[in-house]
Image 1 (cartoon, helix red, strand yellow):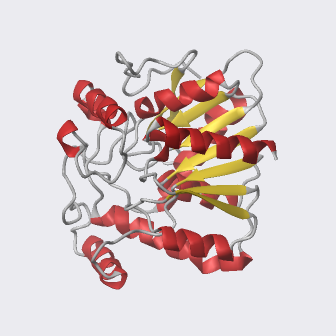
Image 2 (tube, one colour):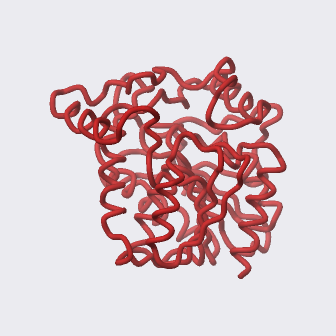
Image 3 (tube, one colour):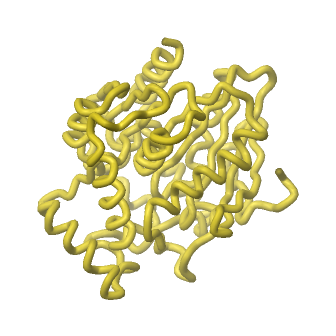
Amino acid sequence: MDLHPPLIPLTPLPGNGLPEGLVATLVTAKDGRKLRAAYAVPNSPKGTVVLVCGRGDFIERWFETIADFVRRGFAVATFDFRGQGGSERAYEDRYRDGLKTFSEYDDDFTSFMMQVVLPDCPPPFYAIGHSTGGLVLLRALTKRTWFERAVLSAPLIGVDTGFWPLSVVRLLCAVAPKVGLGRLFLPGQSKLPIAPQNFPGNNLTSDQRRFHQATTTLAQQPDLGVGGPTFSWLNAALHALRQMNAFGKSMVFRSPILIVAAGRDRIVDNEATRRFCAAATGVSLAVIPEARHEILFERDSIREQFFAAFDAFTRA
């Protein structure tokens, strides 16, 4: 798998070292897009945890969580979606996401599973899908039997649109791509990746050390970053959500699912998550009341609650 160098080498830094045994590799999506992936396989692993990360994520942000799972005896595999991290971008301006439809993300995930996880990682497989990755994972679980169990961290099941009515947001996002404005950033969204000065009042985490860890990596390797969502990205997300929620109780998932929601989430809509869990079959819900959106980048006491939920669910 390592015949080709990754598009951007993994970037360990003091305080965010390379997890033991983690190696980078290259994935080619069905449409030819090149994606950066990485995996670690310890001695005598008890299975593989597959991390499906959120919008704007990059593998380096997950070094700590990867190392946590390796210490717990799991192999770990993850990747950067197209348009972010070390994967290929759609535009010369690397900070614009360039997504048109979530089927592109579906292809990225399937290509990663087929080229890295299934051939090179030991079963049984457990999945963790964060935010956007949670929605992509849900879409896969309607068709695929890859995973024994799946845990979703603050998944994108509904969008918190703030004071904007959802109907207005849907209309604007549907019209903008049709008139050539899809690549524009949404109002109020930064054209640049997160930076240290963005910590006060941020909706992602209350843990300043972990927030600065991510921004330090971006300062060292700015090409890993991406700006805020564009109209095209949100239009694609809203369309994917309509597809998912239209199934209701008729939807069948191919593995048991636990959703761990963040009680103080201001990125995704927790009420939409509760409605989804009430309608879906085989889906359980746990809430960490004090957590912001990025549960696994929160304070130690919050992360420990997530790992406790993961342990209880995967051993059940």
